[in-house]
Image (cartoon, rainbow, N blue to C red):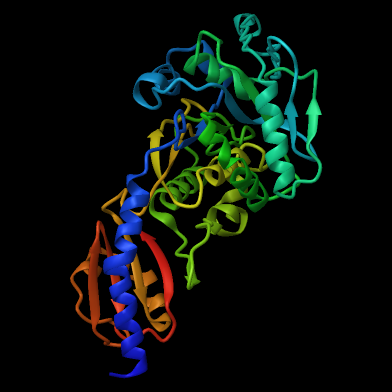
Length: 378
């Protein structure tokens, strides 16, 4: 037996014996009391969803507690597209929060009379600042006067109408990029362990300059479809030698270059960046679910909303963990189908492939010129 073959045999044995027990122990470990796995991106769209029953998104948000997330949070961190700052900022005020009616004046008077006096969350705000500072965001401002803008109170008044859950709002930085906001989300992920859901409130598409029409703008529709596929299917296959790290969905982080008609869907980025924060806050490994999708009746505003759930290695039968020689990676990226479950030889180098079933499927190339960890989601 060659040294290479012996090393492979030893490595396979360690997976079947030691690593199996370690993995099962990790999976079987119970969550901390009150910890949550979910983060959310909500397309809040028009503020009229707070009044108008004709909006399907209104009914989705009214049923949020029953159908999407039934656990009562101890507090909520919401990242609103309508608070733009040059550096991250949190609202840290005492008592109940003011309701900011920050929209144009041609809406019905009843909309300006809505109040959502949710309690402030100064403790949560301090935690947010500490986490961001510890992760390299050197300047995090505290705003001690600002209440909740309509990017926060419009969805929250439908999701939690009693206004009895403390809320902290975090700003976005339009001068930065998607990766920056993804990193922000990653820094905030530990809040979930303490029972704080993280909600990004923006819009899957947001171009208010488009003329009213009974049909959806084809460019915006194509972007919305691309986004759905990118989130649910995973457009990036991240290959990392010897170890794992964050699965950065770089297509979405770099949407301005990667997505079709990005500028038509988002002339300005502030309504898209809350998605990056929610996606990053989901953690190292997650799966996504489209929890609502509708369009406004006259404008090309998509109300697509997503849930991101932290996962372990055995959460989804649709996930595969593949170990193979590095030269085979490109082919696999182009042919990630269920056929991989039945192959007996690598289609590229023709080396034999071994199956090791540990709840998911692991495929190990017999001649690993360079061991590479690859996460693929069909």
